[in-house]
Amino acid sequence: MTPDERPPAPTAPTPPDPRSPRTAPHGVPALEAAAHLPAPEATQVVIITGMSGAGRTRAAAELEDLGWYVIDNLPPTMLAPLVDMSKHGGGALRQFAAVVDVRGREFFDDLVHVVAQLRDQQVDYRMMFLDASDEVLVRRYEQVRRPHPLQGDGRLLDGITEERALLADIRKRADVVIDTSTLNVHDLGREVRAAITDGAEHALRVNVLSFGFKYGIPLDADHVADVRFLPNPYWVSELRHLSGRDEPVRDYVLGLDAAGTFIERYVHALEPVFAGYLGEEKRYVTLAVGCTGGKHRSVAISEEIGRLLRSQGHRVVVTARDLGKE
Image (cartoon, one colour):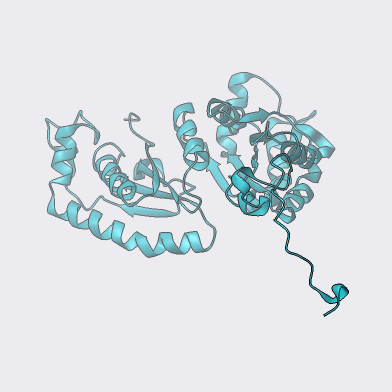
C-alpha cells in the first residue's frame, strides 16, 4: 500500500465551542435542547360585540379586572395587526380583548372578513355577543337619556331595530351569546368570568341558572329542568321567608327522596350530552332549573347540581336569576 493509499490518521474530535449558538449547555445539540424549552404562549383574543346597551362596557371592565388588555371601539381591521404585534413584539399582548360595534360605522362591516382571516391564521380567538330584549334596551336608554348610535332623527326603537338587523349574521357566528335582559352587573360579571377564565383546554363551562316559571323561561337556556314536582317549601310557614341558599330550606329540599333521585339521574344523563358538546366544539352550556317563583326549590337544586358538576371537573357558575323578585 502506497502512502497515498493509506487512510488518514484518526484525529481527536474538536470540542464544541461553548459560545456557538448551535451548541446548548453541557454539549446538548441545539435542536434537542430546543425541544425542552417551553413553547411560547399563544395569543388569546376576545372580540366583544353585540347590541348597544346590552352590557359591552361592563363585560370589557370584567376582562380588565381579570388582567386582560382591553381596547374599546376598535376598527375590526386593526385586529390582525394587533395579533401580529403580539407575536413579534415580545409577548406584551398575550391576552387582549377588543370591543367592536356599530359605533365604528362603515369599519364595522369588515368584522366578518376579519374574523375569517383570524380563523385562517389559526388565531385563538372567541367572539362574545351581548344581547337583550328590545323592551329592556329601550328602558336602559331612557334611563341614561342618550340617543342610540343608529337612531338619527328617528325613534329609539328604529335604531335598535336597524342594529339588530345589522348584527344578525355576527350573532350566528358568536362563540358565546349572553342575554343580559334579566342580569344585574354582578350576574353579568359571573357570566363573563365563566366564559373566559382559564382552565383546561377542553373543559366545559357550565352556567346553572335557577329561575321562576312565573317570570318566564330564560332565553339563553340550553336545557330546562322543571322541579315543580317537588313539595313547595313556600307552604311551610317557617321556611316561606327563607331561600334555597339557607340551610333549613336546603335540608328540606335535598332531604326529599324524589329530589335526590332526580339530581343523581339528571347529572348522570348530562354526561353523554356534555361529551357530545365538546366533540362539536361547544364549550359553554346553560342549564336552567325552574320552580314556581325561583326562590326555594330551584335554588337549592341548582346549587347541588353545580356542586356535583364541579366534582366532575367542569367549570361551573351557579346563578339565581329571580331570587329577591318576590
